Length: 373
Ligand SMILES: *Cc1c(COP(=O)(O)O)cnc(C)c1O
Image 1: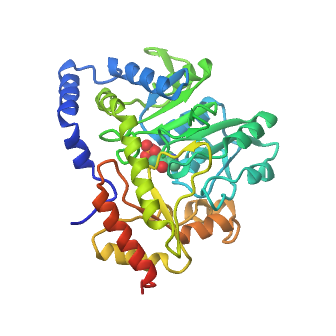
Image 2 (image 1 turned 180 degrees about the vertical axis):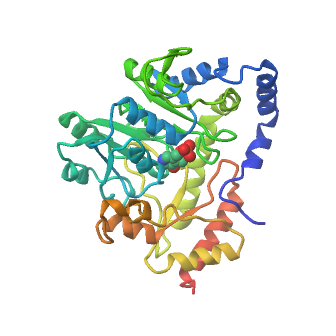
């Protein structure tokens, strides 16, 4: 039987009755925009993340764009970030007219290297966007201290890290803004696009509330240039159902990651994910590393056997065509470039079974030890 990266059909079936009840109720209630489920979801997620304010928006990308816009970041400003992430992180910086300045990653966690942040800082730096890649929290003590010392904004891209914790504290609660994505394949996914900004700052929360709704607080009285970036009530209703089970599904992800590690950590040629001390990795993805030169053939072998796998990400952002204008060259970020050649993500979702994990691990192990040619 083929094994997919995520099985959204199975996930739907698991709580089908609750999803359908919530959706049908919302359809009949007919408050499709800013229905009561929006405020309820904002309260639920803010409480879960231990942050005072949550503002639901149309996507994770918009959460980043609106955060930057609300902080007044734009033309002439630099924002430090990682080149080893999904395009949306840097795209948001470009979208508001600022310049992304990339910082290489730590080879163990694939997250932004705090020492690089200090090296790339200039007086034009207004913010740092960190990404807790694959669900692994960044080095928040060091990064937080640096941002405070320079008085620059810390924005957390938590799109892949809902439910992750650093020293018991939820990620998303460290920065001035925590940006969440509810894209279906994320740890907390809805049935389409969605996102949220969480922030401890009341004035900033107000501003983001205005930005997402055409720059107004009171309808038809517009104070600032805004966007149309609202979350649908229907998606909020679905997310409220999923929030009932979020600790369960994250615990399942962590248990699956444990099983993978038990089966793969001693295999020569494979590096399993490094989980730093004092963190809860929320395993949106289970990403192994395969010694240079072999990754692609291992990937092909799994593909032939019907086992899904993916490379997040095959081309670091500094080498993307869209960023040719920034003038970076191959070799500028050696750790990110090595990671793009070596990482391979394996299927990981709450409903995955122990038998499937054993099958995947055995196939990976065989492909790697055969040299997979
Ligand atoms: C998914 C993702 C986003 C964007 O979220 P959308 O909801 O798809 O707009 C941003 N950053 C990272 C790291 C992501 O994985």
